Structure formats: structure tokens, C-alpha cells
Image 1 (cartoon, rainbow, N blue to C red):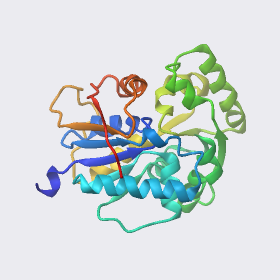
Image 2 (image 1 turned 180 degrees about the vertical axis):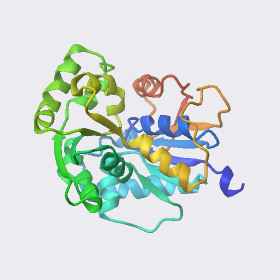
Image 3 (image 1 turned 90 degrees about the vertical axis):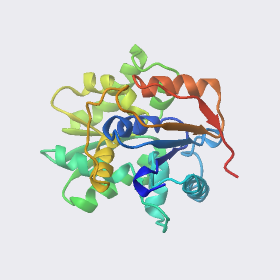
Image 4 (image 1 turned 90 degrees about the horizontal axis):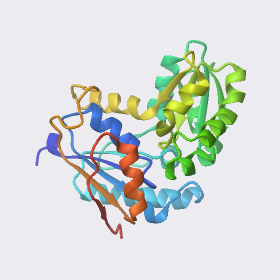
Length: 270
């Protein structure tokens, strides 16, 4: 098998990272993918950095043994830990934080940027560090949004309660004058319509997954095709989980819509 034919691997603590897979699959028509959801050990956000690092290294080792040519850490919490503790790996490792930071700076005219994320991501200040590493003068506001992931998991993306909670989370940053918002959790693209309603047309929403897809495409010399139809010219996808509960498949189908979702296959990492 040549280098170009090998799949791209992705992993997340659960299935929220499927929004990253969806962006890559939609944009890179010549690639195949292996997605690993470590659903038996979620959530990572409540674990210590040492434990998260161990899980990440196990996931990476598993995917390398499956013959991938690159790995995407499709989890903000895991990306934070690996950025703080860099390692040498056999294949290129991509994270969702740095592409999102670069895209936000490109989009923000006033360099007034808001970051929405889980408690763990916000506490780690991952996006703040990544943005300031590029543009020291940028102002970054952060907002933890602990209620949003459970709402997505329950299928309440377009529920009035969800829209009200989004309003409560966004108001402080909108009042502060941000012109760009980073969706700093892989579940949040599922709530994009709600964010757009509250933020309004003058605030740009940044989805790290889209920025990451363009970065990987450029690195691999791929022609990008963001308008590719779901059924056109597709190569394979494998969806692997460490606990293939029926509820995970239901959420996966919503997150990957309109793309078809293959059967979830349970695997053991150890």
C-alpha cells in the first residue's frame, strides 16, 4: 500500500469528533478515514492530564498499527494535553486548536475573539495561547458552556431551551464586542444555527474542523472540493468505538447528516 492510499486516522473521547470527520470527508474527496471513538472512557474532560495523555498515546498507537498516514486529534481536550506535552510520533499529528486560532485571527477585523468550549478546554486556555502565539495584541474572551454537549447528545439541537442557553452563554461576549466566535468543542457545529441566530450576521463563527481540512489538504497536495455531494466518488470510512452502544449510533447519524454512517464496530485498545 502506497503512502497516498493509506487512510487518515481520527480519534476523540466520544463521537463529537464526527463533526471533524464530516468536514474532512466533505472536503477531501480522495481520502479514506478511520475514526476511533473512545466511548468506553469518556468524558476526557473530567480526567487528569496524565490520564488523558495515556489515553491519547494508546489511541495513537492503535491507529498507527492500523496503517494510517496521519492522525487528527478530533477532541479539544486531548489536543490541549498533547500541545502541552509534545511527543515524537511515526506519523504527522494534527489538532483542532491551532487551525481554529489561525482562522479566527484571519476572520476578525477588530481582533476581538470569543472562545466557546467545555470547562476543561477553557481552563487550559488553549485557544488563548494559540491566538497569542500568533497575534499578541488580540483580545480573547472565553466562555465555558458545560450544558451544550449533553443537549446535543440528547438530540435537542433546535430546542427552545437550547437556544435560550446559547443566548445566556453568548451575551457577555457579544456585549464585550467580539466580532468572531470560535466553536471550541467538536459538538458545537451541530448547534451552528442556534449560534447564528443569537450572534447575528456581524459575528463570524469559526469551525476548527473546516480550517483543519484545508490545512491537511494543502499539506497533502489534495484538491479541495467542499461542494462534493455525499454520494459522489466516496472512498471508505471505518467507524470504531470502544463501546458501541445504540445511542452512539443515533447521535452519529445526526452529526454526520447528510452523509451515511457505517456500522459502528467495537474494538479493544489493549
